[in-house]
Image 1 (tube, rainbow, N blue to C red):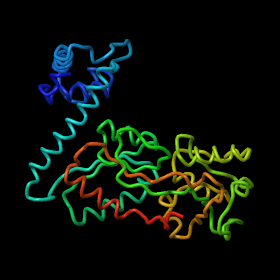
Image 2: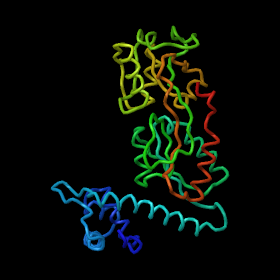
Image 3: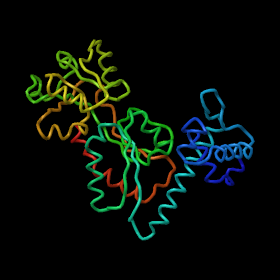
Image 4: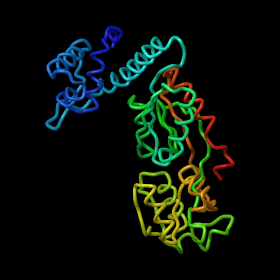
Amino acid sequence: MANIPHLTAPALRYFIEVSKCGSISLASSHLNVATSAISRQISGLEEQLGTPLFERRPRGMVLSAAGEMLAAYARKVLLETDRVLAEIKDLEGLQQGKVSIACTEGFAMEYLPVCIAQFQRQYTQIQFKIDVYPPAHVSDAIRNGDADIGVTFSLNPSPDINVAFRQPAPILAIMAPNHPLAHKKSVSLSQIAAYPLALPYRDTTVRQLFDICASRQQLAIEPAFTGSYIAALTQYTIHSGGISLFGEISVRNLVKEQRLVALPIRDRGMDIRNIEVQTLMGRTLPKAVDVFLGFLIQSLPGENELK
């Protein structure tokens, strides 16, 4: 790829959009650019590099091996271009800028909106966007250039991801204040098994750790209620006499309001996940993103608050 320095920004933008959409027609609609113009740019890239960048299939276009390599390069180039243009516009200081965040639902419910509102009291012109993903897909959003910052619960390292902040985030047993177990200092999975259990789907770190730990102890625990929406799980817990499992940050306000009680779980393995604040490895962050990243890390709860 010796000619990469001569590749143009429009060609790379069109290429990335086609890779996301899987077709030139969808990319045309998203970019409001004629399909013929996009097709010419893609053909030009393939001619310049001497290799196909897509596999043309009946159901759409899929990146080839060379296309995957170019996509990783192009995302970094376009992110760096956007950063430089934003900072040229902002030479007088942090007067404007945009910050996009990918996170799991627990952070989006209360913690991040409050943090953003506090930040905007000082930096009133900074705009924010939050998109909610399953935990494993937050890193994908960072790698694909769809978000500047990722905030998620993680069990394992992710390639191409810089972890700006990591902190243990044990899973807690959540129940109503009048629950028979609410007065205890901690509980075990065997105790939890005696009550209706509300759990998220298996694409969450909560469910993955619960399933592993229950299987290790040969506990056959079937949830009475499952869902992808935290508010539904907490409301069920409040009204059913049952128990749900969350990290502290997801239910902090409900615990402060004494609508729920959060207890540590004693079983080995229920405390091995981490909160991670992620960025793309090797990327120089725009000024607005970098300043908010520091603010976000400072505002995260201390380790003792998560236990």
